[in-house]
Each structure stands twice: as structure tokens, then as C-alpha cells.
Length: 474
Ligand code: SF4
Image 1 (cartoon, rainbow, N blue to C red):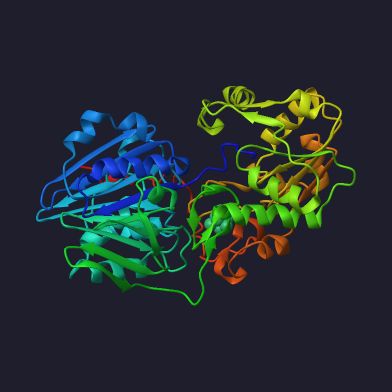
Image 2: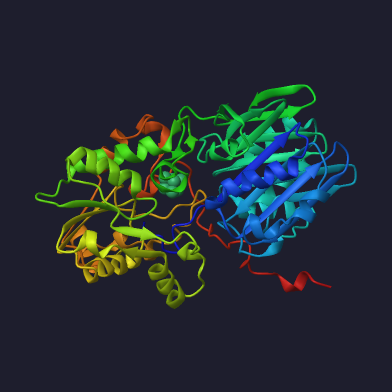
């Protein structure tokens, strides 16, 4: 896993209706979804009329202590873990957003990116709306409050105006709602635990509280859980989906089911396909880059008949490398996190399987470490095609300049990382390994074919660097 700072997950969301102690169950759900965002965590709960909220910077484990959870009484709630894809990482941008307007309280937690955010926000500001944050999630909450009619109708109207990716869970004092954008970019599933209804980004968050998976929220669907039970409203929908294929390759947990299929098996199939396309003659070992390369490496080993060995061991007590703020510290973090097993690697011709290469700097360091540990030859095999285009739908492949495959050939990348050979899975091979049809995936970071048009002015911080007209101030 070339987990440079430019390959980060977008967010994890969780909602529950009808539970005895929702705050603790949400906390556990966020704990299971922590891989999707580590910058901030938040929970909002309601007892049917009173709403309580707590948010903080850092991991769920650090933000929520026993005393805080004990005070958050209620029977419904929503939660969020964040990695910022629109708006900087700071407490005021942490979610869920809680908006209070005379007789209304509405909270929202969002995974994805709204790409026409500037245009919509300008419209609302011209009508007097005041924003506290620089995120697209607050924009959705304001749009909902500015509409008229029952909540479900307002949501349908808002979703017709938005462009981009959104999986959201929402809270009113007496209901929890969940919705996905018309293309269903980000995952969102529905579960049940006794009488309680649960919404979560991935099924691993259902497993942790021993809840049963029912089904996914469909693209364009709005699902409402309240005292009447569970019901569904159809919002805007497209003729085909554009689910993020990278959720299967890297983002989601291998023990999760997303888009209706298990991630573990998809990753293994990617490895099998890679072994068919790019075998290595006379290889002694297949070694995964832990942990996200494990399953593709297993598939490669089974497909090629080359023995699988853990030639690199991960220290689980070191945080993800991208959390480190400077490249100097980050490089140090890479060495702290993974350690080669010399007795396994010495004098061996090794196939190293990784899930992807973003900037190439991490792969370069790791190749050097394997050589220093005695590997005779290193043949890198990557279980997805080269990433050549940025993502605008909730994943931080932020600029073309950061993507090594954008301006380098496979041979040049191989030279840069210092491997003896390098091969990526082909686009056709990637789709062949998928459990769903090609037309239902977004693969824009590989192909440049964006399912939703991107506004020219759109950037991650577009709401933080807008020119101000100072003449309008008194
Ligand atoms: S561009 Fe890539 S990372 Fe972004 S949604 Fe599409 S497939 Fe996923």
C-alpha cells in the first residue's frame, strides 16, 4: 500500500433508531469505521425531544470517554468519523452538523463530495444564510432547512439540486434518515438489532454490535426510520450506478460487505487476475504489502502456485503514516510501521503485491528496505491499474501533480521505485474481477471518465479561499 498523504478515505457514517443506549452503539460503530477517517469524530443523540451532541478532533477512542457517553441519553442518534475532502481539518468542520432553526433541529453526517458547492452556497448566502464552516455537509443541512414542506419532500428537492457524491445519515428529534446520491458513489447499508434500525457505511460496523445486515440503501433512495418503522422514498436516480471501485480495491475493510458483496473475495480475485496477466517466472515467494495487499497477494499465490509468505510484518501500534504532518516524520513512520523478515527474504526472488501506487515514494522506500533485508529480486505487482486522474467524489487523490502515473510510464515508475519489474492490473482485468457490471462503477481515477461533471472552480478548499468584497462591510 503506497499510502501517501494523497490517498485517504473520505468519512464513515453511522445512524441508529430505537436503541436503548444509542451513544455507546454509535461509538462502537465509529470504532469499526475508524479506517475511513481519523481526523475527527462526533455523535448526536436524541431522546425524542432533546438533542445532545459531542464532537472532537482525533480518533473516536480519544474523543469519547465513559463520562461523555454516559451523559448522552436517548433512543436515536447519528455519528461520523472524518477525513476532510472539502474544508480543512479543524473542529468547526467536524461532523455531524447540528442546525437549529426556531422550531426545527436537524443534524447531518456526510460521506462524499458535493461538486457544485460554490454555486449553491452563493445562492443561499444571497438569501441571507450564514455559514459557520467551509464544508459541503453544512451546505446540505442549510438547503434542507430553506425548503418548505414535509422533510422527505424537501430532501428530494435538495437532492435534485446537488451534484456529486453523498451518502448521508440525518437526524430529527424523533427520526433517523439515510440517503445515497443518484449514482451511489459511496456505500451505505441497513441493519437491524432487535427492534433497532441501523445505517452504516460498511457492514463491519453492524458486526461489531452484533446487528444483522438487511440490505443496502439504493442509489437515489431515502430511507426513514421512525415510530412507524422503516419506509423508503425514491429521490433522483440514474439509469446506471457509479459506485466507487476503489472501495473494493483499498478503502473498505476486507471483512465488510459493500455494494452487496464481500470485499475480501473481490481483493482475492484481483490477485488471481493479476497472476494470470503478469506472472513472474521462477519466483520463490509471494509477499503482500500489509495489510491492504494481503488478500490480492493470497489470490496471486493461489493463481500462480508460488508460495505465500509474510515477508513484511506490520506494527499495529503505529498510526497510519499519512497522519504524520511532515514528509520527514512520515518517512520515519513508514520504517516504524513495517519491518522485513530477513530469514524469509534472504536470496529470494520475491513477488511483492500491493493494492495501488499513488505517489510512489512509499513504494520506493519499501523496495529499498526489502533489498537491504536480502531479497535477490523484487517484482512489484499492483492489483489495480495506474491511478492517473484525481478523484472529486470524496477521496483525496487531490492533484494530478501528486500522481506518479500521471506523468510517468510503467518503466519510469519501476525505475523510480527501484524494482526489478513492475506490472499493474489492466482495466479489463480489474472489471473481470468485480462482482458487478462495469457500467455500475466509477473508475474515473483510472480512466478520466467522470460520471458527474466537475465545476472549474471546485477544489477541496474552494470555500476557504474565495475573494471577499470588503466594500460590502459597514
Ligand atoms: S474517481 Fe476513483 S476514487 Fe474517486 S469515486 Fe471514482 S473510482 Fe472512487
